Length: 232
Image (cartoon, rainbow, N blue to C red; front, side):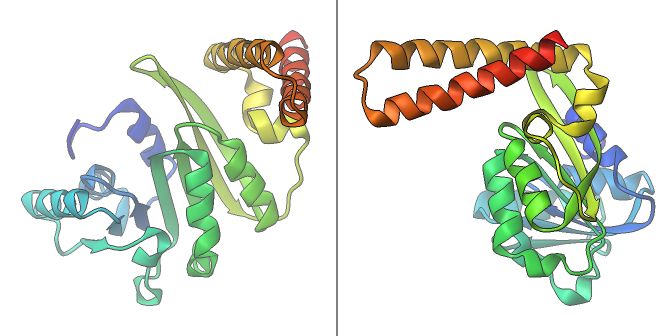
């Protein structure tokens, strides 16, 4: 993968960026996503934020190599601190992290989202944390998709401002993904079900502390929910 040939996962993330938007890519790594979006005429300007020195330097080199230093600003900053008011950022992308970490990034500097209209996230795991953040901070899910690439399954969520509540099933599995129920969606949750059953078995065999009992009850409730969805 490089700035001219994105992975399928990042191409899908890119597909949700509205034409002409000013974008901030948080945790940009090599800045492949903003470079590709600029080169394909999809966005007007971009901020590439990276908290780790090595990837930050790599992003700077790639942006310079592609001749995009006038359109992409690379910043060494923690999360949304890469966004300044004068940037007039309208879209934020965060891809390739755990859902809990993404939710933490969005929560810790939520004031920096004041001018943002759209958030596009691709969590590697635990997308539920992002859906819970969305409800708490008055964002709603306007689109979702799920894909399998290199034997890994990824979800992509698109958020815009608005009030919305979700059922327990929707928070866990995604309100739009639940409606579509693609083959990849079924595969993901069949796999999750097997893992939950494995953990329940381990907890059953271990010492029966109150903590273990509580955890087993929670897992059984989640297991029942997933089974009910998959059978419906």
